[in-house]
Image (tube, rainbow, N blue to C red; front, top):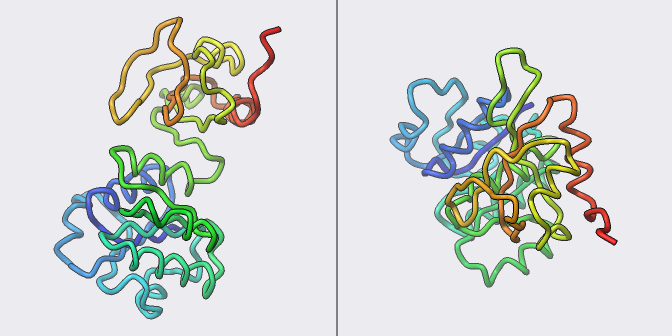
Length: 221
């Protein structure tokens, strides 16, 4: 799959490297050629110098073949404009834009553009919206049978113990990221809104676990 990212700041570079590690093709757009240094020498994707909402620039980045587009530059207006062009002109279904002004979020949502506020875990949130199947593999054992993946969780799980998550999915909580900080959960730790759960489980159980956590938790009655 091909991904296009507008903006090569800290978040854009992190996002590009993560998507490339997941085995996908990536093109990164930035107005400043020097910004591409953040990608590192190991980055094998495409870099395009230009304005991210310019159609010639987008075409040079392969927008016509893009599975997803992320606008993560330093300007709200530029991000929304580029996201709208990607969706409305080129028909890219998976589009997300970073915003700095949370007050504009509702307006952008009405335009059909998912937004992510500027927080410590912005790149994680972007990945969850862009990558297919929702989960973000972070580790795979040498045999390829066991993975640690960040799993999206329904808000209906808020207040439930993380041990309930393990029981429902058959996996093990490797760690939790809360407000940008990682920690090891205890038996009585409960799921809070915004938590990122990193679960170790068999690769073949990923899809099932995702369906379980996307649904309300089982009743405790």
